[in-house]
Length: 394
Image (cartoon, rainbow, N blue to C red):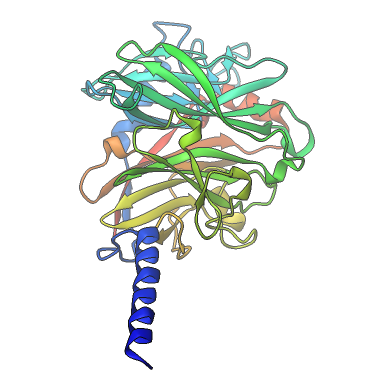
C-alpha cells in the first residue's frame, strides 16, 4: 500500500476509535460489576414507619410508592412519591383482629406527595400532597427523578427540577393509566414552592400506548452530561429501556434534550431506539435505576419472568448506551407477609457512600382487583411503604 494510502487508513481508523471512545467515554476503569452482598437498611425502614404512623397530623404522608429522592443544597433530603395515602394511622389490632397498624377505608388518597428529611436523617414534614396538581380530564402526574441545578445557565439561583410522568385514566391493561407525556417541574429553594411545569415530550400522537416512552425513571451525571433513562409501556413483563442526555444544568430546557437512536444522539425523540431489552428475557421493569460506579454503569431492575415479583437483578455497561451485559444473579429482599410484590428499585445516591449503595424498593398487595388490594393496604399500612437495602458491588 502506498504511504499516503496507509496514512489515510490510519487517520480513518483513529477517527473511528475516537468516535467509539466519545460514545463510551474513558472506560479504562470499566469492569463487570454486580451485587456481591446486601443487607436490609433497618434505620431507614424504621424512620418511614415512625413518620407514617405519627398521628400528630391528619394531612400528612402515611404511605406511598414511586420512591425517589434528591439532596438539597442545605443538606436536607426531599423524598418524592407517586400514589400516596394521607390521614390518620391507628395502632393495632386492626378491625379484623390482625396485629397491624391500619388506616380507615376513607383515608385521603392523592396522586403524588413529597416529604422532607432533615440533616439528622429524621423526616420533618410533608411538603405538600399533592405537590403537582392533576392536569384535569382524568390525567395526573407522578414525580420521578430529580436534580438541583441553576435556574438558568450561569444563574446563581438554584432550583429543584423534578421529572413528571403524566398518565391518563385507562381501562383493560392500563388500569394504572395510559402513558401520556414527560414533563419537568421546577421547585424554588429553599421553600420548595412549585414555580412551573414544562412539557418535555408529548406522547399522545403515538397511537400504540405500548410504544410510548416516558423518561425520568432514573438519571446519572457524568462529565458534561446528565443521562436520563426511560422505558416503554408495553404490557409484557419485560420492557425496553431508552436513553436521553442533556447538558449538565439544562434539564429545564426541552430543546437541549437529545435521544439515542442506536448509533448517535439526535434531537428527534421519535428516532429513539432501545439501549436494552428484547421483550423476552433481557430488559427492564416498568421502573428501574442506574448508578455510575468507578467507571461502570450499573442498572438495577426487577428480574424477568415470575422472579420479577420478588427479585432485583442488574446489568452493567461501559456507556449509558450499552452494550449492557447481564442479567446478573439477583437478590430477593425481604417482603411483608401475604400476597405481595416488590417493584421500582431505586438507587439513592445522596445516601450512598464509597462502595455502598442504598436502594429502595416499593411493595404492594398483588391482586387484579384494585378494591381488594386497597382493602389490604388499609388493613396493614406497612404493605404500602418503601423498604431499603444497602448493597455492595464487586
